[in-house]
Image 1 (cartoon, protein in one colour):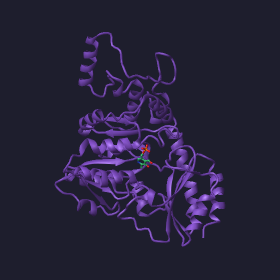
Image 2 (tube, helix red, strand yellow):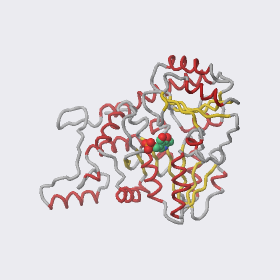
Image 3 (cartoon, protein in one colour):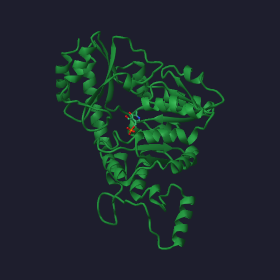
Image 4 (cartoon, helix red, strand yellow):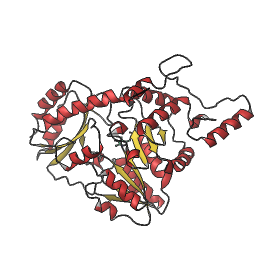
Length: 391
Ligand SMILES: Cc1ncc(COP(=O)(O)O)c(C=O)c1O
């Protein structure tokens, strides 16, 4: 009788055995069986039903990780979800599962900068070439396809630049040429965008961000369709990239309020975007301005927006940009995002990485805001006082 996902999140994963509303944390390396016969029986069950939660060793997970995987599978509408110790572990697992020496990858130019280093530099040592496409010109994607192209790797929106792409078109190009697709969906999470339902083969979320929501745990999830399941399963087994039960518990706990928090992040971000949009020195990198390409692409595919946004600031005085950022009192200076607290970063080369299609003029500067769950009026007042320093 469970009606919506919001209700499901609140009522799932109870421990009926111990009568507690939350599942136990089952920590295990060794799993003890009654006899060898029982070990073999479990192994047969696991072979027959590889997503059924049958374990003979702790590296495969325990009931605590299994519960999280089941919740995420329902949220994603996918065949299965693998969970990894970090979000970047899921990025690596997705690529490592399907790409081999001699293959080529086509990736969105504004991917998360460690994803760029992995594809562009690290994988090149394994004779795997990556070509980057312009997220707003998919001809640059289609033109890059060769017989060797194995994977199209999308991140939406682009890290730091927040370009929203035509996801449906990317899927149809990939299907036309029989190329696999993966997307980093950390910004929207499947609460706002369900990539597997759109036709992507793999979808990554850094659980470190909104899933956990409290900046106290790291994790990743990789949702897959049936087509790539066996390949990812084999790679997961050989790399041992699996989330531990304590982290799985914390992420499950965070998920209980995912909808409530994301709705509030969205509302707060909207108010701050409305305030910032009045400032002539600032171009908002957030789906706010109706009729812009980014807004249309966001609206076409997403049911909501999260709390991460960019500010492209026009100023000949970089020190005044630094002063603006450093004068904020309610925003923490730190990496990551998706937690309850607001954060800010001045994005210089270390954060943006080596982009081909990012045309930042000399007098343009990037600042990233993660809008948290504080009272938005307090955040606006804080930004207002800090903006006095911007020249
Ligand atoms: C878009 C995106 N994907 C992946 C990651 C990696 O996640 P994690 O930090 O959990 O490894 C990050 C981290 O900031 C990110 O911003």
